[in-house]
Image (cartoon, rainbow, N blue to C red; front, side, top):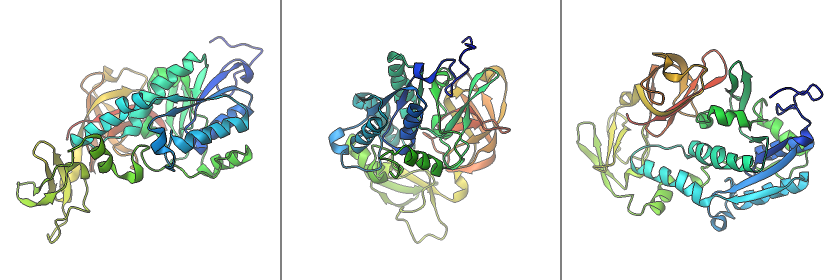
Length: 380
């Protein structure tokens, strides 16, 4: 875009006044996206708030602490009324079920540990909603995610948030370069959640003190098994708990109740050494347990890789990076060896415990805050 000398770049990076810059704000009803919308409205942008209704409105009305349903839609609407910009609710229930919930259930049934929030960003918010923003002739779409977009030599780059405790880069690794060109993340530079809440109070937003959502939106109280049993009747079939040599140690009420690395709740007490879930065999309905050292993983196979580096992913034999194999763990040194533009093996220089198919492995530049993409762990 050629720069207009009469109008330096505005805060969203466009060479025109805010009043001539339309921005669609993805509003979940929480404090983060509400602050983004209010801040941009106060700066004079042409703000359009959009909230996606992702699952059953009636069932969700009384559920607190979720996003994109019931009370949260109401809260997003109140924020828009407070700040004086239009707000729309789009029914994405069918899209969400097909693109996110069904895969979540099937992944669990296959013995994986899925991360539906990543799929939601990838397949719903940054795909369908982003296209809606383009249809509304918006110059860009803004969200309340804690991640940074910075301009580099080759174009926009994805960077971890300034506040490591709030950083959401693990959940946004699949954001493509094309999407990144259109997206904006106004909160990524803040150093604490307290700053966000202070802004909400300053704008007089009704959600200033609203608690953060904790659970996956369609999984009340973190009870994954109950949701899967409802979606896939008969999924919780009983089976055997066995050690790595096949000796039966007990029984279980369904593989879906267990995750790799689990120790508690196995019901096989009385053994000298603690045992952990090291494998889930869906075909034989067996939960396989073993000593802690069996959880250590050094080589991780990846597929569906999204690469955000400057050079093509498979232009090098290997990439020396830092990786996260869980959202709660710090990045660790690793070597990525590409097998194709979208598949690779990752060697962890320090073995990690509890690496599970269905989780993401996210790549970071070890010398900066830059996110280099990531992929899906698919077999162990």
